Length: 133
Image (cartoon, rainbow, N blue to C red):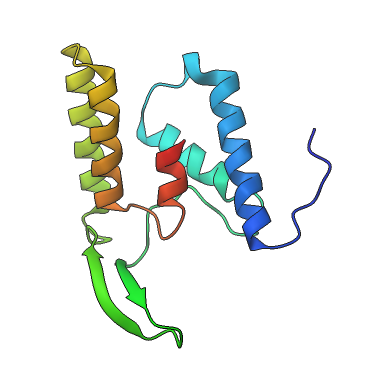
């Protein structure tokens, strides 16, 4: 088991990422791509942060560029709204299942899923780490 306690946020994020990857390595054959699986991975990623993961974002969030003082310089990307996120995720998963059943090439299918997932940006934070899992 992991005995070293993370000392700061960066180490907490890495430890959560490690735990999510460990779950995948141990259980991959029994982990179909579902909403629950995505939420479970997000919850694992948040396991060392002192916050609860596994929930869709409660408010809209844009990807922005900030200057050294924290002021927003520009909006790089407008993500799907918080209200539309549950439906967008359901739609994304449904399209993935149909493509998988149609025997689409997994090496093409998965990056397209990841891109759509990142465009929805369903969680307040941790979307990139979930996508890399």
